[in-house]
Image: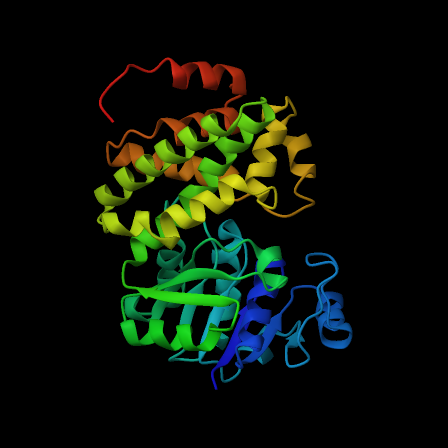
Length: 332
């Protein structure tokens, strides 16, 4: 039985801890707020992030990170992308020397333009083959309600990926393995940006043709940048690529799509933030990092660049739509 520490008790961290417990792993969930840890431990719920969901009796919770990390074989990092580095600095001394470090965050760090596994490696000094990423069509609430889904666990060390796979396989959660960490991770970050664009289209009253077009051209952008960085093209046609993209761009459960829809309906960035109930719409930050990363590699990313201009430069959604539709025609 694997001993797993999940650091971060938001909707996805709590849900993944539930998945692990249901799969038979020995799981401890760390919550920043002691009252959240007590609620999970004593009442079997996390009302702030997963209202109405009963958590397994075997799931332990604590607000003491060192206690959660003690003896862990796998450490799942479930804090927002832009706060991962800060949190890791405080956790590094308590990380077990040989534990697999599994990133659940989907984003690219502002400033450094590093993917989350790169942040983990830099802060902790862990070797690349010890760091893994989980990515796929994994809307937290659906999984917490035990609606079946699949995911990808990517790690340069295939055996570590298999160990994580075994730790979280349950009747409703089916993980596959991959060694393309870069591709899986970039796809997970980029889909949030494309979901913002899809939300904007919904907010403007556009229909399914428009959404399908944004999703497809968004996938082309993601693949183009991924290949330029060294990822495997096939990754973007799989669960971490197309699978996650379709789920996040299509579902009203997606914070990024919800955020984008508010912008498309004419709300300000501050007003749209209220729609996510304090939870992070990662694409708002990642769009800037991805656009800068693409510029460094001379890759054309019109959707990501447009989302950045709407979120941070004051461009209206209506003008962005006109600019995208007015681009020169060319072969697909």
